[in-house]
Length: 572
Image (cartoon, rainbow, N blue to C red; front, side, top):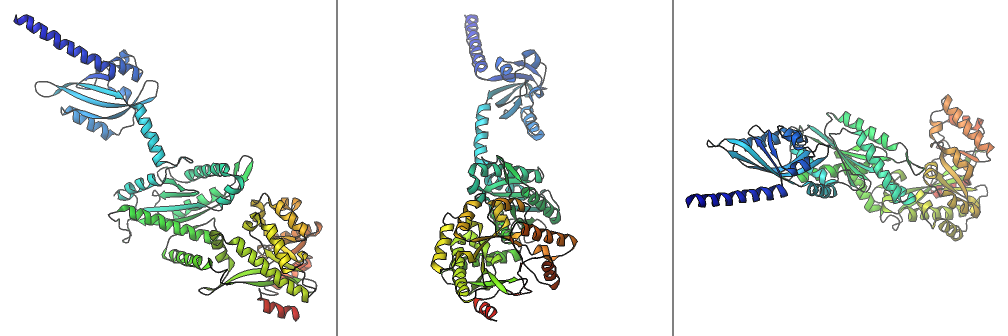
């Protein structure tokens, strides 16, 4: 009876084991190795997943599917765990025979002998490749910018915490805050699609400018943050920054269009050797402050003319606070009547009589005194006040010119500088026409001055200038010769006057003389009026008179004058 009972129990137990084995083989990837790790059994799912035949696996160890993804420490800890008789559980990335990769959720169970030593290991795996791909996609969405595929600010913060807390990390770390200059105008003119392509191209160039060990992320919009921790000196950081500025300024070609952009860069520095740079308990505060300092320095770089960089310092922070204060004051400068116009005379180089004026704006601030345009115009652009202030300038200048033309017949030209923002305003031509009607100034006395770089970036300029020409208004190309595409514009734009930039006569060496003489001769043959700006010395004056220039402007004659002093000049 006992034998039959034992046999029945044995069969029952064997069936349970077979059922377990069947269920395991159907649901999991199974392998059994000896205590040295050499495979002596694999099931069908192991072969199916690894894409190896069974005979190719038997006698091998698990290095045959090693993906080299995991560190040596990871593998050492795995072996240490199972060799000590404990179960190990974790996720492993493996490599199939065809070179593809797959992830498996793995449990390794050691089988122990009577002395408690492992004599074999059973590895039970489940394929989680799809789950890991989904997790990677979620990670990509959470930590990477969808447009440029660069890490975003969340990824950057995570990496920076690890970097700054690492005792073995670099002594010097630089934070570069980059902003593309005038990107909005490119986006508005050529469309968001081309703007997006441009951002991706910029991202590619930035990656090529730095070490692969350094960090780069898209902060948002047209802003990027670079973290350089592989460089040892500030001079090296400056060289990389200059390289970035140079690379970004090279032309981009998109859909047959050439795009020229530049970047302004702010830099903040963190040094472990500096006693002031103590890592706080909340390291996020330090990271935020370093990025803010770089952002402030970038703002200063923009105010200093763009396409340059500024390193954060006490002086630059002080300058920024002044800029913020100026911004608050400028918001109300127009309604407080704080702007004023001065007029620089245009002189006939044959008679030396004043035949016209150029209107120039000044800000007579109660708080800051007289402020010049190069300091406050960039702030006006940021505030969106260029058009209303520009219209005020035009109206004031036309009104004053009407007074002078009624009194003095020899004053025949009023030059007024016009911003590219005004030119892009759909109401610009109508605004000019309304101002002329309101002031009663004859349109033939007004000459709109546009800089050559404005022409380069405004594809629809002809549609603005021709209606002005039809009104009887003249157009002058200011700063002529400072951009390489000058001559092509003279063919199709209604230009009346070329104003030769001051830089050409500042240094009248042999090459400078040839260039000025060539521009004067070309202008004469094209029937254009020629004005030379910035004449300051007798040598400069004599040279341009000898070369047949008609009109001059500069301190050798007069500095810009207030209206009442201009009255004295005209009546003398």
